[in-house]
Image (cartoon, rainbow, N blue to C red; front, side, top):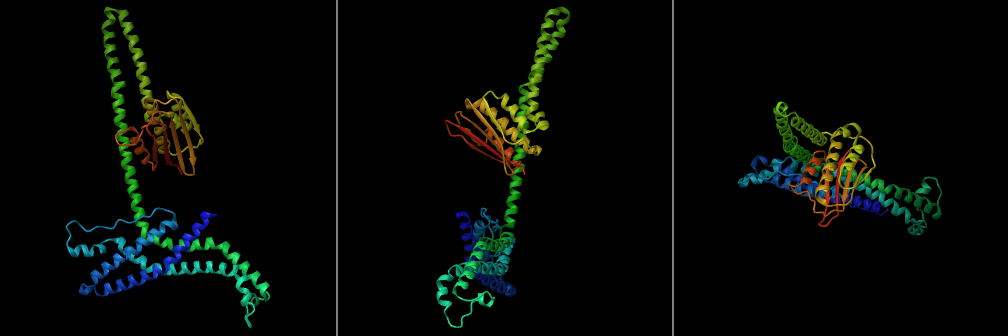
Length: 415
């Protein structure tokens, strides 16, 4: 109830305060634009237009601040093009005229007035009717006794008199009071929609482009790091074993004629080395594309990770749905890398892994009772996980004070 009342008051403030602001802005911008265009031929209009565009920018910034309250989102300010370094006085003077957003600010200041008038009138009406209707029993004692006074109920054929009038106006006030939050909200959104389209639309698009560029860069970085890690693991593991295996087989070949028993022992050692190499290759293949993940989904794959961890893991998977391959891969590798870090560095005695879906967000929560100190700074393992999540528009948060415990939360959009 309190939040709804606060929303009504914020919307009311927006429509009421915005009306005189819109009138002042309309007069300044229309007059400045007309005077500037009309005198451009004698160059007087150039500074007039520049000043008008700067004024429009000021009004637009105020409107953006109000929009953040109405639309319940952080304010977004466009990036106005700065003057080039070393630009002369005239170039700096006309710089506002070279920015497309400046002209959109000016356009908003001019076309905003009709929307502000409609929003203002609707808000005033839907506040005035409940106030007047619900307080009629107080002032109606006077107005109903005025000679010749004809009230609305009498004109509608509902009767006359103080009692009839009070019942009618109080009922009307109650009806309008129930409609008030929706009417005021609609009035505010009517005007805010125009403001968002002209004042923040380009900036929001630019932010989205920047986010996509960062996600792409993060994906490239995560992929490059994964390939380097895989190359290092292959070089330090299976490659060394295969070199050793080749030398063992060459020695067995030489021993076959001179010392068959020694050759048998060498071959037995080579077979054992082959099995160990296959085990390492299987472990590496799980890090590239685990078959259990693609075949059966996240729940069995996370269960397999928990079973292989050397620290006892309490696994709680509350969703068994299948998701896009990129989403499942990101969640799986975050869990795999985190459990590896827990086993290697945390000195924990217990670990919890929880996978839940909240709306259109898949949330992986991993906690341990270890020594803490984990962070996502560059050069650390968790930084690569953050890059991997950014590639799918996800986020990674880490709470790991020195001395523990550690809580890692990965959120990935899955809608």
